Amino acid sequence: MIRLAHGVKGRSSVSFPVRSRFARPLVLLALIGVFAGPLAAAPQSEQAASDPSAVTPAKLSYFTRLWQLDREGRVNKPGIALHRSNYGLMFSYNDDPNPAPLQEVDPAKTLVKPEVVFQLSFKARLWRNILGKDICLWAGFTQRSFWQLYNFDDSSPFRETNYEPEVLLTFGTRLSLLGFDVPFVQLGFNHQSNGQSEPLSRSWNRIVANVGIERGPLSVLVKSWYRIPDADDDNPGLTHYVGNGEVWAYYFLKKHRFGVMLRDNLNFRENRGAVQVEWSFPMFAMVAGYVQYFLGYGESLLDYDHRVHRIGIGFILSDWY
View 1: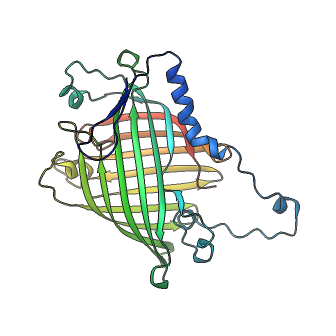
View 2: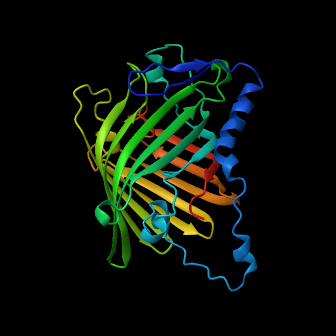
View 3: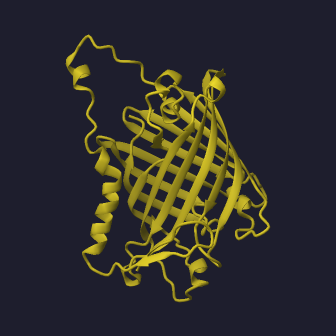
């Protein structure tokens, strides 16, 4: 049985059976359609292609396009856009799944090592050009799900889903430092939870501050946060495993994107952290192939204190070309 948990902490889940041998591939095809359907055809302007005198504007940097930092072009940009990476790992392999939290509810619960992982992430521009300045207010939402699709003996349940709404005030800075551009800084509020009831409930709130740094084909996002104390803490010691920040770096080569994420608690006595390495390669239109490798702690809220070693392959929406 597939269980889709949604909402906020403490809300009940919605369940529906997937027992037919035909249902799983149909659901998988529907997931692919969510990503690829609207983007199956994204041709460039025929006029530009046929008119040799047409002037091709200089391509804006990755962060400039992602956060609509070009003030003149911002007016014609849609108010809803992609936020973080949107991808589906149709096959990912975790060499040490962690059934312990789920066994608190169902002692007979078992997990299989292969599963599907997908992430959906969008943002909406709430207010642009605040006070006549290069300041925009954004609201973002990211959902990441871990689906035990290949656990046929247990009716392919969703093992864990994390929901992450946030509000980000983005300041266009146009600064330069040691040959690097600093196109923006952000301040905001972030909430993350898994929508489960006790004893599986996990959630936390943070004040966040981010800085974007770019130089040529290299884009670096430095993220930091302060966890807001919670009297009802259902994931004690979370920052011991995920620290107070992380760094994302992307390098673009033609239509390929190479990425790495580094996170560390900076505690050299009991060091905990994580690394994620990824490669995106062109396929068609705005859909790219995607390989992701993860090693460390904090991959999901339910497994924040469990060391995960995973590799997966699938597809990703390519918002960089």
